Image 1 (spheres, rainbow, N blue to C red):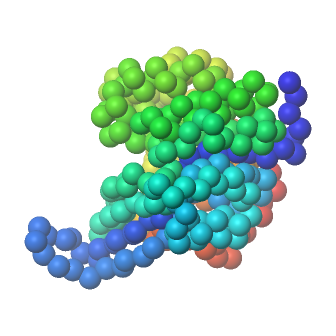
Image 2: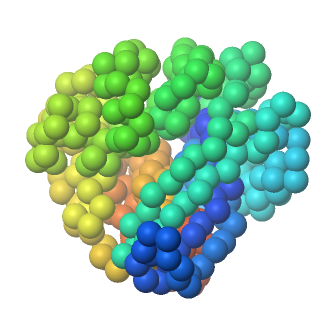
Length: 316
């Protein structure tokens, strides 16, 4: 079934508020230090939706929030970003929140709360809207537990049956390990993924400990037949595995301030460009420019400055 090229990309998954804590020096056990403490909008899926919209792609979001003040702020946030939101509201759970610890080197660790986003059910999906999607993006945060796994799988199959393409971000090497690689593969390999967006650690976990990027990408291509693999390599850039060929993408910067949301910004920028241009290599270069800007700032989606706006305005 052909899909209108002007149809929106849908992103399904988590919207959460990040409580970002960044230290200016090493925090010793039992010690004290100065730093920054910020409340910023986040959630891996919502971040991807926002960055795709910022890059000019019509984007819609499906997720679940609490009927609370943070839920109201979530709706206001996506509306301000130009993302059409299909939010399910609930009194049973609070809007999701995540503690993000950024150390003095810029590396981040996260503790995710079990908020409303983890309780999305198949019967709550906006099925008619999803049937009109051009593309559906999912993150593994919708697959580690059930719910929301059944809803994510139902959305994927609904979109595929309607002719949409599908992308997937494996999300977290630690969570894949805790879930079990075989279980993770069992609930994701049958979806017909067109674009896989892992980082190196996730790729290594899924491929039995491989360390060479080309080996990882090739093995992932075997695990997900037909998928283009967009392997994110942090300070080493990225690698596009497409039609059995590897194309390295150099990094745009290594000026790391805060790694929070870098992968999400890359995914959003890449998908926005790729769905318009059809060129994964050019899309990867574009996405690298965006994620390079993000790691130089605090938070998953800082307000764009003139330098970033110049990147986002570049024609595809």
